[in-house]
Length: 563
Image 1 (tube, helix red, strand yellow):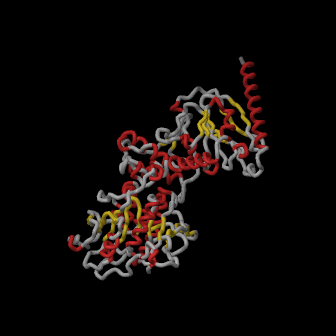
Image 2 (spheres, rainbow, N blue to C red):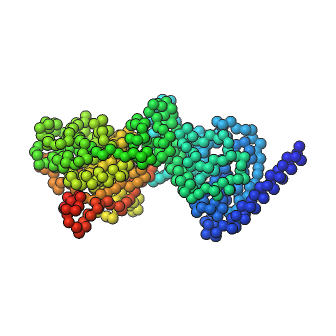
Image 3 (cartoon, rainbow, N blue to C red):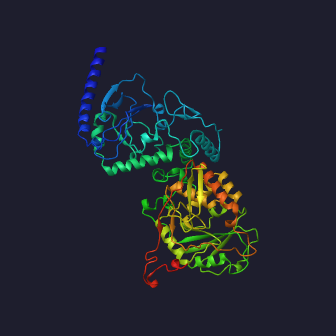
């Protein structure tokens, strides 16, 4: 029997060496620039093997990283003398066949027991986190605990690399060879969009299979692999929350997310099914579903001063907005300490005006998802904003093309202050911006729901306590969800009334502490998110013929050019 086994081993090794020589010839014939990039030796990580194939053999510039698994057959490691050619070395394991429950999941790639306190690792099977939560813990408690684990395992300004380093696996395409292997979160994740799943009996055909993948398919696979990593596997908190949300969808199947929501940006964790289980009502899926947002908007005006006469800024603002052909209704959020004025005090308009007086007059209340908001688009306005009807119409047309982003007029920016080692906030007019303030901006109504029900009570309480930074927090949230900057549109330089009327509250913009508070908010918010979600942009959208030397009668948005 021993002689038979030795003969089989020799035959397998000879076959492997023969295949290696063929692949080595392929690598030698590849262009030199394709082989210029350094290749690290393949690494065996918890049952996963990551070989490096030569670029010339793949017939595509971006390399494909391979994760080859073996559950019931020998582990195949790929290595070569020059680091580029592929050689198959065979080794046998004497372990018993593992049950599906014991098989190592992809999540084990991300954590090591030495790095992450509170994780228990059995000898076989996936990582079992010890989260220290009592049975029946609420979702907010779980989210808070996950945040603590995140902070314990990652530095202050961003997530740390796991034991399989992010640089080594960035956008690599896994090639999985293990028949019947249950992939993590396969109940909701469509792994066919991110991995090449082959038959374990056809191992030697893998090089030819990978070479047949065209460039467009490689790009799509790499993008989706990166999306899945960022959305569900890049931190302890995301793995915990993904698991809990899947369980939630099982229990409340009538309001669960479908696979489209889990497998397209921004991912299932940012799509709350309590808002709707229909993807057509979310701003992220219009293009995929061939839909478009409604052709009307709801203006939401934050009122903090008493209504005393007809020439106040809020009255002029209501009249200008009501003249827009896209305006469906105007909602005034009465956030003033004075009693609500009678209906006769409000201007007469062609669109309905609804005044809502909240029980708690807080800054976060302006983003509460009121049932009265029926349109997809929301125009958020401060009472002292100065906008013409043309400006409102043009901004809405732009938003209609970018329904998942904030589109508006007043822009701000952030920067990294290396001297103080913290993030800074600036209101200077520069060549780039990263925020559009919600004092005059369009966005989708779903962000009201996400702001109220996704963000932690600690951040909302901070905003309410300072009566400041709610617009910055909304920008943080939208940029974190979309991974995109807001869009600034053309405006008159003055977008605020220069003076608040006598007898009203002092404008918060004149408060010397206002700017210092916003600096503090920048760092507190980035600390909770675990990274800086804001992105800079140098794009501003102007109307066609804006400032062109042609007759004013030929221009559609004429008032925008008036100072």
